[in-house]
Amino acid sequence: MFAIVEAAGWPIWFLILSSVIALGLIVERLIFLRASRVSPPALLDEVIKELKQRGVSDGMLTRLAESSPLGRIFAAGLKNIKSPPEVMKESIEEAGRMVAHDLERFLTTLGTIASISPLLGLFGTVVGMIEIFGSQNAAGNSPAILAHGISVALYNTAFGLIVAVPSMIFYRHFRAQVDSLTIEMEQQAIKLVEIVHGQRKG
Image 1: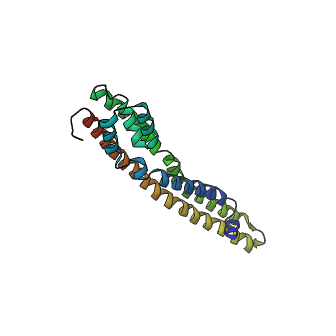
Image 2: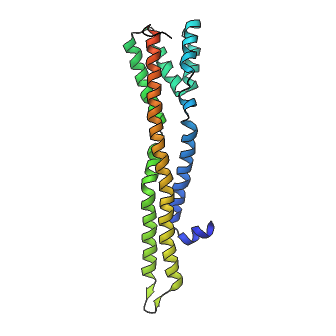
Image 3: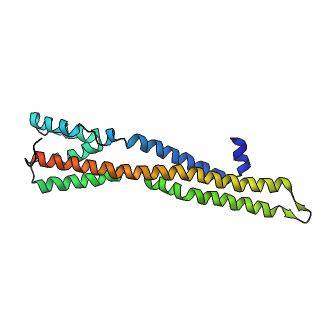
């Protein structure tokens, strides 16, 4: 591995840094954006059951808000349980926007890495070409410098694509996942409001 890095020259370090950051973000988002963690399927039934048995309490709201992103939305709505449905929906929408922002965290960085990695690879290619042309002198080309320049150019181009392709795939995947989870949480929140205000049977 070190031999490849050495052959690719100093421009490869920008791509190595980008790949480490991208890998860290991908792992973090894979853990954070699990459906069971963001929008637990049984949470609505549990909340309705507790509401019927004990009603709303500060302890219940705190526990809900700390349990999951969907729990935060439910807690925001239940704080205004005695208000009209419109007020409850507004508080849910505000909490929903904050939750959606949290779900999208780091995705811009991942998308940026996916976009700039080929450019960083191109930068390495240009550096390699400069070394190739810089090796020409009156006595002719130095084979060693020529070979090094070619390896810098090719390795950087290849590594740029290796970093960019998975980053873009995961970026698109996470964007779609966030959209899906947001819609799911919105539907759950609407059900909660309707059940609380007697517009739907629990």
